[in-house]
Image (cartoon, rainbow, N blue to C red):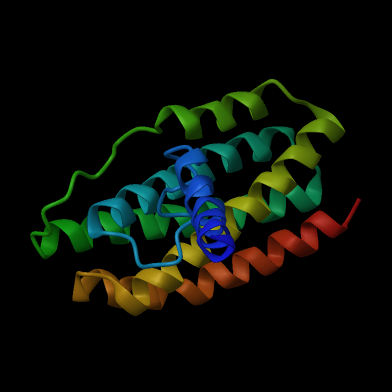
Length: 176
């Protein structure tokens, strides 16, 4: 009886957190397995669009170090966005490639638009670290276990740049 109760308790403790998670928390970003190709493409495109839009804001609102970082992000993520579109089109990969930010990513841009000065800089830094941690995780997982050989190769080729971006963002965040 006690063993059965303990087993049932262990099951509940294991399963309940899964049901309590929102759809976002179960998304490709927080998973430990390679995302499906559609999810990878959509998330990579959203991530690039977020980087591009927030970096445009940073060029207008940031200090010198933020502007230098934003210039790099704008160039690199414009490039990866074009590469992703070309990989999908050239290899006839059947996915829906988003052309605009989804609500969650647009909300992040909107939040930054409302901030200025030190508040903007602080939020931009935090957002960059979080976004790049998520991107590194997703690209690592897809490069190892993704469905499309072409996109796996692209993810593996892009990963070192994202890891470098994360390191840059973390260094930027340390500076006050």
